[in-house]
Length: 129
Image (tube, rainbow, N blue to C red; front, side, top):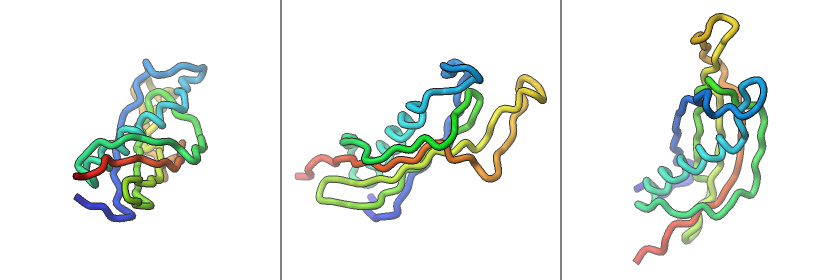
């Protein structure tokens, strides 16, 4: 286990077209928040040997749209360690995006990635006996 500030975990996921809810193949912002919950769970497993509980967000910023066909990368970075609380900074980035103007399955790697969501939240680890 590594209970060190700066420790981070990253997940990547393809955004299927079935998740598009709005015109232009847009996906709701909660998609990124769901990824933050998953990456926070792995971070807590690695730092505390337990999934922990998400207590809440102190800040959430939606900075760009998520679209169906995107490949999203979400990173959780431990920024503060309390007795049982863990403060985490989150960032979600689009690393690949579909390019339908070139064909139905065309896509591009984005360099640099596009930041779509940033957040800061607190999770709670169970009391160790």
